[in-house]
Image 1 (cartoon, rainbow, N blue to C red):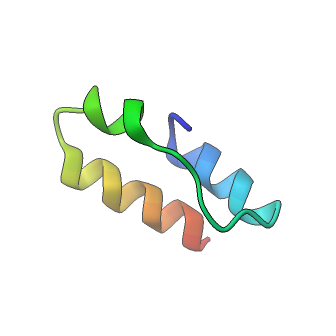
Image 2: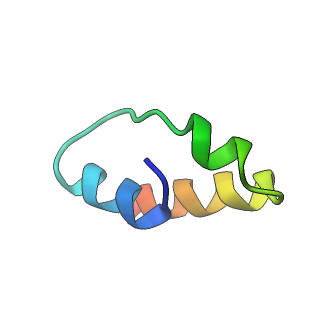
Amino acid sequence: IKSPHDASVLHRAGYDAVLVGESLVTNRDRAGAVSALIDAAQG
């Protein structure tokens, strides 16, 4: 996935896990990116 929106969509579809490698490697604020993905997935 590449965005918090993707995490939210997949969470609502029932996914328990996703791969986020590229979205974290290319983001300068990795902690912020992880936080945003977690927040989006928790809905």
